[in-house]
Image 1 (cartoon, helix red, strand yellow):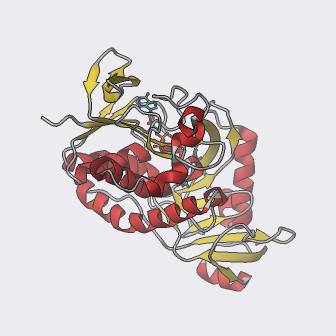
Image 2: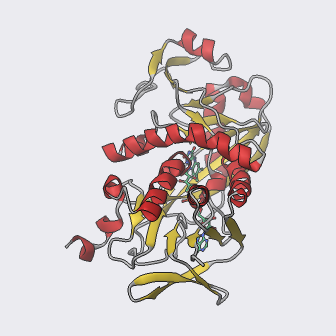
Image 3: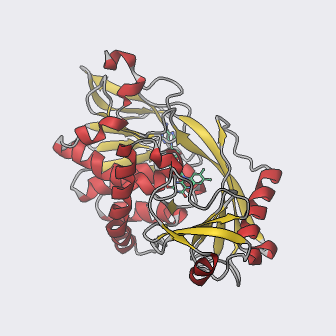
Length: 365
Ligand SMILES: Cc1cc2nc3c(=O)[nH]c(=O)nc-3n(C[C@H](O)[C@H](O)[C@H](O)COP(=O)(O)OP(=O)(O)OC[C@H]3O[C@@H](n4cnc5c(N)ncnc54)[C@H](O)[C@@H]3O)c2cc1C
Protein backbone atom coordinates (compact mmCIF):
# COMPACT_ATOMS: atom_id res chain seq x y z
CA UNK A 1 0.00 0.00 0.00
CA UNK A 2 1.31 3.48 -0.88
CA UNK A 3 1.87 5.57 2.20
CA UNK A 4 -0.11 8.82 2.35
CA UNK A 5 1.12 12.38 2.16
CA UNK A 6 0.48 13.98 5.56
CA UNK A 7 -0.20 17.66 5.96
CA UNK A 8 0.27 19.28 9.37
CA UNK A 9 -2.24 22.14 9.58
CA UNK A 10 -5.79 22.44 8.31
CA UNK A 11 -5.99 26.14 7.45
CA UNK A 12 -6.63 27.32 3.91
CA UNK A 13 -3.09 26.40 2.83
CA UNK A 14 -3.11 22.83 4.17
CA UNK A 15 -6.65 22.09 3.05
CA UNK A 16 -6.34 23.56 -0.44
CA UNK A 17 -3.10 21.65 -0.95
CA UNK A 18 -4.70 18.43 0.30
CA UNK A 19 -7.61 18.93 -2.10
CA UNK A 20 -5.26 19.44 -5.04
CA UNK A 21 -3.21 16.36 -4.14
CA UNK A 22 -6.29 14.20 -3.65
CA UNK A 23 -7.73 15.29 -6.97
CA UNK A 24 -4.44 14.36 -8.59
CA UNK A 25 -4.87 10.85 -7.19
CA UNK A 26 -2.64 10.95 -4.11
CA UNK A 27 -3.58 9.48 -0.75
CA UNK A 28 -3.58 12.45 1.61
CA UNK A 29 -4.55 13.27 5.19
CA UNK A 30 -4.56 16.59 7.02
CA UNK A 31 -3.87 16.65 10.77
CA UNK A 32 -5.19 19.79 12.43
CA UNK A 33 -4.62 20.68 16.08
CA UNK A 34 -7.78 22.73 16.40
CA UNK A 35 -5.82 25.80 17.55
CA UNK A 36 -7.34 28.98 16.04
CA UNK A 37 -6.48 29.23 12.35
CA UNK A 38 -5.63 32.58 10.73
CA UNK A 39 -7.93 31.46 7.96
CA UNK A 40 -10.98 31.74 10.23
CA UNK A 41 -9.97 35.33 11.01
CA UNK A 42 -9.35 36.41 7.40
CA UNK A 43 -11.52 38.81 5.46
CA UNK A 44 -10.99 36.82 2.28
CA UNK A 45 -9.98 39.63 -0.04
CA UNK A 46 -8.36 38.47 -3.26
CA UNK A 47 -6.54 41.70 -3.93
CA UNK A 48 -3.37 41.36 -6.00
CA UNK A 49 -3.74 44.94 -7.24
CA UNK A 50 -3.88 46.59 -3.86
CA UNK A 51 -1.93 44.41 -1.45
CA UNK A 52 1.37 46.13 -0.87
CA UNK A 53 2.53 42.99 0.94
CA UNK A 54 2.44 41.17 -2.41
CA UNK A 55 4.98 43.53 -3.88
CA UNK A 56 7.88 42.01 -1.95
CA UNK A 57 9.26 40.78 -5.26
CA UNK A 58 8.30 40.02 -8.85
CA UNK A 59 8.01 36.30 -8.10
CA UNK A 60 5.34 36.92 -5.47
CA UNK A 61 3.40 39.33 -7.69
CA UNK A 62 3.29 36.79 -10.51
CA UNK A 63 2.36 34.02 -8.08
CA UNK A 64 -0.49 36.13 -6.69
CA UNK A 65 -1.93 36.89 -10.12
CA UNK A 66 -1.70 33.21 -11.06
CA UNK A 67 -3.42 32.27 -7.85
CA UNK A 68 -6.36 34.59 -8.44
CA UNK A 69 -6.71 33.08 -11.92
CA UNK A 70 -6.68 29.59 -10.36
CA UNK A 71 -9.41 30.58 -7.87
CA UNK A 72 -11.79 31.23 -10.79
CA UNK A 73 -11.80 27.54 -11.68
CA UNK A 74 -11.17 26.15 -8.22
CA UNK A 75 -13.96 27.89 -6.29
CA UNK A 76 -16.76 26.36 -8.41
CA UNK A 77 -15.08 22.96 -8.22
CA UNK A 78 -14.92 23.09 -4.43
CA UNK A 79 -18.54 24.22 -4.35
CA UNK A 80 -19.62 21.36 -6.61
CA UNK A 81 -17.72 18.77 -4.56
CA UNK A 82 -18.83 20.15 -1.20
CA UNK A 83 -22.38 21.09 -2.16
CA UNK A 84 -22.04 24.52 -0.55
CA UNK A 85 -21.17 28.06 -1.56
CA UNK A 86 -17.84 29.70 -0.75
CA UNK A 87 -19.12 33.17 -1.77
CA UNK A 88 -16.45 33.68 -4.41
CA UNK A 89 -16.73 36.95 -6.29
CA UNK A 90 -14.55 38.90 -8.70
CA UNK A 91 -16.74 41.98 -8.90
CA UNK A 92 -13.78 44.26 -8.31
CA UNK A 93 -12.30 46.15 -5.39
CA UNK A 94 -12.73 49.88 -4.97
CA UNK A 95 -10.03 51.85 -3.16
CA UNK A 96 -10.99 55.34 -1.99
CA UNK A 97 -9.12 58.33 -0.54
CA UNK A 98 -10.47 61.34 1.30
CA UNK A 99 -9.47 64.99 0.98
CA UNK A 100 -5.95 65.51 2.34
CA UNK A 101 -4.92 61.89 1.78
CA UNK A 102 -2.27 61.04 -0.77
CA UNK A 103 -4.62 59.22 -3.11
CA UNK A 104 -6.51 56.01 -3.37
CA UNK A 105 -3.77 54.25 -5.24
CA UNK A 106 -0.29 54.70 -3.77
CA UNK A 107 2.56 54.49 -6.23
CA UNK A 108 3.78 51.05 -5.13
CA UNK A 109 0.53 49.33 -6.04
CA UNK A 110 -0.45 47.75 -9.33
CA UNK A 111 -3.22 47.91 -11.91
CA UNK A 112 -6.65 49.45 -11.59
CA UNK A 113 -8.43 52.41 -13.13
CA UNK A 114 -8.68 55.92 -11.64
CA UNK A 115 -12.24 57.07 -11.04
CA UNK A 116 -13.87 60.39 -10.19
CA UNK A 117 -16.07 60.53 -7.11
CA UNK A 118 -19.17 60.39 -9.33
CA UNK A 119 -17.86 57.35 -11.21
CA UNK A 120 -17.04 55.60 -7.94
CA UNK A 121 -20.49 56.34 -6.57
CA UNK A 122 -22.04 55.01 -9.76
CA UNK A 123 -20.29 51.68 -9.08
CA UNK A 124 -20.93 51.79 -5.35
CA UNK A 125 -23.82 54.09 -4.36
CA UNK A 126 -23.19 53.40 -0.66
CA UNK A 127 -19.96 55.45 -0.79
CA UNK A 128 -19.57 58.68 1.14
CA UNK A 129 -19.79 61.96 -0.78
CA UNK A 130 -16.61 63.02 1.02
CA UNK A 131 -14.25 60.88 -1.00
CA UNK A 132 -11.72 62.77 -3.08
CA UNK A 133 -10.48 60.03 -5.42
CA UNK A 134 -10.93 56.36 -6.14
CA UNK A 135 -9.34 53.46 -8.00
CA UNK A 136 -11.12 50.39 -9.22
CA UNK A 137 -9.40 47.03 -9.76
CA UNK A 138 -11.88 45.22 -12.00
CA UNK A 139 -10.69 41.66 -11.56
CA UNK A 140 -9.93 41.61 -7.84
CA UNK A 141 -12.49 40.07 -5.53
CA UNK A 142 -13.15 38.06 -2.43
CA UNK A 143 -14.16 34.71 -1.02
CA UNK A 144 -15.50 33.66 2.39
CA UNK A 145 -12.66 31.99 4.33
CA UNK A 146 -14.96 30.49 6.96
CA UNK A 147 -17.10 28.96 4.24
CA UNK A 148 -13.89 27.55 2.78
CA UNK A 149 -13.01 25.93 6.11
CA UNK A 150 -16.37 24.10 5.95
CA UNK A 151 -16.35 23.33 2.24
CA UNK A 152 -12.76 22.18 1.76
CA UNK A 153 -12.91 19.18 4.15
CA UNK A 154 -16.15 18.04 2.51
CA UNK A 155 -14.69 18.50 -0.97
CA UNK A 156 -11.50 16.73 0.10
CA UNK A 157 -13.41 13.71 1.33
CA UNK A 158 -15.12 13.41 -2.07
CA UNK A 159 -11.68 12.62 -3.48
CA UNK A 160 -10.67 10.19 -0.75
CA UNK A 161 -8.67 12.61 1.38
CA UNK A 162 -9.41 13.23 5.03
CA UNK A 163 -9.08 15.82 7.74
CA UNK A 164 -8.23 14.58 11.24
CA UNK A 165 -9.31 17.26 13.71
CA UNK A 166 -8.07 17.94 17.22
CA UNK A 167 -4.70 16.16 16.99
CA UNK A 168 -1.35 17.87 16.97
CA UNK A 169 1.80 16.94 15.09
CA UNK A 170 4.72 17.00 17.55
CA UNK A 171 7.69 15.87 15.48
CA UNK A 172 8.85 14.37 12.22
CA UNK A 173 9.99 10.78 11.99
CA UNK A 174 12.85 10.07 9.60
CA UNK A 175 14.67 6.99 8.39
CA UNK A 176 18.07 7.32 6.70
CA UNK A 177 17.61 11.02 5.92
CA UNK A 178 14.07 10.69 4.55
CA UNK A 179 10.70 11.45 6.12
CA UNK A 180 8.90 8.30 7.28
CA UNK A 181 6.01 9.93 9.14
CA UNK A 182 5.10 12.04 12.14
CA UNK A 183 4.60 11.62 15.86
CA UNK A 184 1.54 13.26 17.40
CA UNK A 185 1.44 14.86 20.84
CA UNK A 186 -0.79 11.99 22.01
CA UNK A 187 2.06 9.60 21.24
CA UNK A 188 0.60 8.11 18.06
CA UNK A 189 2.93 7.47 15.11
CA UNK A 190 1.63 7.96 11.57
CA UNK A 191 3.59 6.76 8.56
CA UNK A 192 3.90 8.94 5.49
CA UNK A 193 5.84 9.16 2.26
CA UNK A 194 5.94 12.96 2.50
CA UNK A 195 5.00 15.59 5.07
CA UNK A 196 3.90 19.15 4.34
CA UNK A 197 4.21 21.64 7.19
CA UNK A 198 1.31 24.09 6.87
CA UNK A 199 0.99 25.11 10.49
CA UNK A 200 0.55 28.86 9.92
CA UNK A 201 1.98 31.07 12.66
CA UNK A 202 2.19 28.25 15.24
CA UNK A 203 5.14 28.78 17.54
CA UNK A 204 6.37 25.20 17.41
CA UNK A 205 7.35 24.87 13.76
CA UNK A 206 7.95 21.26 12.75
CA UNK A 207 11.22 20.38 11.07
CA UNK A 208 14.50 22.20 10.68
CA UNK A 209 13.35 25.81 10.10
CA UNK A 210 15.11 28.13 12.56
CA UNK A 211 12.93 29.48 15.39
CA UNK A 212 11.25 32.74 14.43
CA UNK A 213 11.59 32.22 10.66
CA UNK A 214 7.80 32.46 10.61
CA UNK A 215 6.35 34.84 13.18
CA UNK A 216 2.85 36.11 13.96
CA UNK A 217 1.43 39.46 12.92
CA UNK A 218 -1.78 39.77 14.83
CA UNK A 219 -4.76 41.22 12.99
CA UNK A 220 -7.99 42.43 14.60
CA UNK A 221 -11.26 42.67 12.71
CA UNK A 222 -15.00 42.80 13.26
CA UNK A 223 -18.26 42.04 11.49
CA UNK A 224 -21.18 44.44 11.19
CA UNK A 225 -24.69 43.39 10.27
CA UNK A 226 -25.13 43.96 6.53
CA UNK A 227 -28.26 46.11 6.29
CA UNK A 228 -29.68 48.63 3.81
CA UNK A 229 -26.97 50.98 2.52
CA UNK A 230 -24.15 48.47 2.94
CA UNK A 231 -21.70 48.25 0.04
CA UNK A 232 -22.03 45.49 -2.53
CA UNK A 233 -18.30 44.89 -3.02
CA UNK A 234 -14.97 45.27 -1.23
CA UNK A 235 -14.01 48.85 -0.38
CA UNK A 236 -10.56 49.79 0.88
CA UNK A 237 -9.50 53.00 2.60
CA UNK A 238 -6.32 53.93 4.41
CA UNK A 239 -7.87 53.16 7.80
CA UNK A 240 -10.08 50.12 7.10
CA UNK A 241 -11.37 47.72 4.49
CA UNK A 242 -14.94 46.54 4.17
CA UNK A 243 -15.91 43.12 2.79
CA UNK A 244 -19.65 42.46 2.42
CA UNK A 245 -20.43 38.74 2.70
CA UNK A 246 -23.40 36.79 1.37
CA UNK A 247 -24.12 35.52 4.90
CA UNK A 248 -25.23 38.99 6.04
CA UNK A 249 -21.97 40.32 7.50
CA UNK A 250 -19.74 43.19 6.50
CA UNK A 251 -16.28 42.18 7.65
CA UNK A 252 -14.21 45.24 8.59
CA UNK A 253 -10.45 44.95 9.08
CA UNK A 254 -7.75 45.00 10.05
CA UNK A 255 -4.94 45.99 12.42
CA UNK A 256 -1.32 44.77 12.25
CA UNK A 257 0.56 44.02 15.47
CA UNK A 258 3.79 42.09 14.89
CA UNK A 259 4.86 39.33 17.27
CA UNK A 260 1.77 39.54 19.47
CA UNK A 261 0.32 36.05 20.04
CA UNK A 262 -2.69 37.18 22.08
CA UNK A 263 -6.09 36.68 20.50
CA UNK A 264 -7.92 39.54 22.21
CA UNK A 265 -9.41 42.35 20.11
CA UNK A 266 -8.57 45.75 21.59
CA UNK A 267 -11.66 47.97 22.07
CA UNK A 268 -9.97 51.19 20.91
CA UNK A 269 -8.54 49.63 17.78
CA UNK A 270 -11.89 48.03 16.93
CA UNK A 271 -13.58 51.42 17.43
CA UNK A 272 -11.05 52.99 15.03
CA UNK A 273 -11.84 50.36 12.39
CA UNK A 274 -15.56 51.08 12.82
CA UNK A 275 -14.97 54.81 12.36
CA UNK A 276 -12.93 54.05 9.24
CA UNK A 277 -15.75 51.93 7.82
CA UNK A 278 -18.43 54.52 8.57
CA UNK A 279 -16.33 57.28 7.01
CA UNK A 280 -16.31 55.38 3.71
CA UNK A 281 -19.91 54.15 3.93
CA UNK A 282 -21.97 56.41 6.21
CA UNK A 283 -24.90 53.96 6.36
CA UNK A 284 -22.66 51.65 8.39
CA UNK A 285 -22.43 54.18 11.26
CA UNK A 286 -25.53 52.68 12.84
CA UNK A 287 -24.90 49.05 11.88
CA UNK A 288 -24.91 46.59 14.78
CA UNK A 289 -21.69 44.75 15.53
CA UNK A 290 -22.08 41.02 15.21
CA UNK A 291 -18.64 39.87 16.24
CA UNK A 292 -15.03 40.96 16.80
CA UNK A 293 -11.93 38.80 16.74
CA UNK A 294 -8.17 38.57 16.25
CA UNK A 295 -6.03 36.14 14.26
CA UNK A 296 -2.32 35.53 13.70
CA UNK A 297 -0.98 36.05 10.19
CA UNK A 298 2.06 33.87 9.49
CA UNK A 299 4.76 36.35 8.44
CA UNK A 300 8.40 36.21 7.36
CA UNK A 301 11.08 38.90 7.60
CA UNK A 302 11.32 39.39 3.82
CA UNK A 303 7.58 39.19 3.20
CA UNK A 304 7.85 36.10 0.99
CA UNK A 305 6.16 32.79 1.78
CA UNK A 306 8.09 29.58 2.39
CA UNK A 307 6.98 27.03 -0.21
CA UNK A 308 8.84 23.96 -1.39
CA UNK A 309 11.12 21.16 -0.28
CA UNK A 310 13.17 21.54 2.89
CA UNK A 311 16.54 22.49 1.34
CA UNK A 312 18.72 20.70 3.89
CA UNK A 313 16.42 17.68 4.05
CA UNK A 314 15.11 15.37 5.21
CA UNK A 315 13.88 14.16 1.84
CA UNK A 316 10.09 14.21 1.67
CA UNK A 317 9.66 17.28 3.90
CA UNK A 318 7.90 20.28 2.36
CA UNK A 319 6.93 23.70 3.68
CA UNK A 320 3.84 25.77 2.96
CA UNK A 321 4.18 28.63 5.43
CA UNK A 322 4.47 32.38 5.80
CA UNK A 323 1.66 33.59 3.55
CA UNK A 324 1.23 36.63 5.80
CA UNK A 325 -1.65 38.91 4.67
CA UNK A 326 -2.56 36.92 1.56
CA UNK A 327 -2.80 33.24 2.36
CA UNK A 328 -6.35 32.97 1.11
CA UNK A 329 -5.39 34.55 -2.20
CA UNK A 330 -2.20 32.47 -2.51
CA UNK A 331 -3.68 29.08 -1.55
CA UNK A 332 -4.47 27.76 -5.06
CA UNK A 333 -1.03 28.62 -6.48
CA UNK A 334 0.63 27.12 -3.40
CA UNK A 335 -1.44 23.96 -3.74
CA UNK A 336 -0.77 23.63 -7.47
CA UNK A 337 2.97 24.18 -7.07
CA UNK A 338 3.33 21.66 -4.25
CA UNK A 339 1.22 19.08 -6.07
CA UNK A 340 3.49 19.34 -9.10
CA UNK A 341 6.62 19.26 -6.99
CA UNK A 342 5.61 16.28 -4.85
CA UNK A 343 3.86 14.13 -7.44
CA UNK A 344 5.93 14.93 -10.54
CA UNK A 345 9.18 16.25 -9.05
CA UNK A 346 8.72 19.31 -11.28
CA UNK A 347 8.56 23.08 -10.89
CA UNK A 348 11.17 23.57 -8.17
CA UNK A 349 12.84 26.44 -10.05
CA UNK A 350 9.57 28.41 -10.14
CA UNK A 351 9.57 28.25 -6.34
CA UNK A 352 13.20 29.35 -5.90
CA UNK A 353 12.26 32.75 -4.45
CA UNK A 354 10.17 31.04 -1.79
CA UNK A 355 12.75 28.44 -0.73
CA UNK A 356 13.50 27.97 2.96
CA UNK A 357 17.13 28.07 1.88
CA UNK A 358 17.15 31.76 2.79
CA UNK A 359 16.74 30.85 6.46
CA UNK A 360 19.28 28.06 6.62
CA UNK A 361 22.91 29.24 6.36
CA UNK A 362 24.29 25.68 6.00
CA UNK A 363 22.06 25.07 2.97
CA UNK A 364 23.22 28.30 1.33
CA UNK A 365 26.91 27.55 1.76
C1 LIG B 1 -7.56 39.82 10.41
C2 LIG B 1 -6.98 39.08 9.23
C3 LIG B 1 -7.44 39.37 7.95
C4 LIG B 1 -6.91 38.70 6.85
N1 LIG B 1 -7.43 38.97 5.61
C5 LIG B 1 -6.97 38.30 4.53
C6 LIG B 1 -7.51 38.55 3.26
O1 LIG B 1 -8.41 39.39 3.12
N2 LIG B 1 -7.04 37.83 2.19
C7 LIG B 1 -6.05 36.91 2.33
O2 LIG B 1 -5.66 36.30 1.33
N3 LIG B 1 -5.52 36.63 3.55
C8 LIG B 1 -5.94 37.32 4.64
N4 LIG B 1 -5.39 37.09 5.88
C9 LIG B 1 -4.22 36.20 5.96
C10 LIG B 1 -4.65 34.76 5.97
O3 LIG B 1 -5.58 34.56 7.00
C11 LIG B 1 -3.44 33.85 6.19
O4 LIG B 1 -2.38 34.17 5.31
C12 LIG B 1 -3.84 32.40 5.94
O5 LIG B 1 -5.04 32.09 6.60
C13 LIG B 1 -2.75 31.45 6.38
O6 LIG B 1 -3.25 30.15 6.23
P1 LIG B 1 -2.49 28.89 6.82
O7 LIG B 1 -3.25 27.69 6.39
O8 LIG B 1 -1.04 29.01 6.49
O9 LIG B 1 -2.55 29.10 8.41
P2 LIG B 1 -3.77 28.93 9.41
O10 LIG B 1 -5.04 29.33 8.79
O11 LIG B 1 -3.36 29.60 10.68
O12 LIG B 1 -3.84 27.36 9.63
C14 LIG B 1 -2.83 26.68 10.32
C15 LIG B 1 -3.47 25.49 11.01
O13 LIG B 1 -2.45 24.66 11.53
C16 LIG B 1 -2.89 24.12 12.74
N5 LIG B 1 -1.69 23.71 13.47
C17 LIG B 1 -0.74 24.49 14.01
N6 LIG B 1 0.24 23.72 14.56
C18 LIG B 1 -0.12 22.44 14.33
C19 LIG B 1 0.49 21.19 14.64
N7 LIG B 1 1.66 21.12 15.26
N8 LIG B 1 -0.17 20.07 14.27
C20 LIG B 1 -1.35 20.12 13.62
N9 LIG B 1 -1.95 21.27 13.30
C21 LIG B 1 -1.35 22.42 13.65
C22 LIG B 1 -3.68 25.24 13.38
O14 LIG B 1 -4.62 24.72 14.30
C23 LIG B 1 -4.37 25.87 12.18
O15 LIG B 1 -5.65 25.32 11.98
C24 LIG B 1 -5.90 37.72 7.01
C25 LIG B 1 -5.47 37.39 8.30
C26 LIG B 1 -5.99 38.06 9.40
C27 LIG B 1 -5.52 37.69 10.78
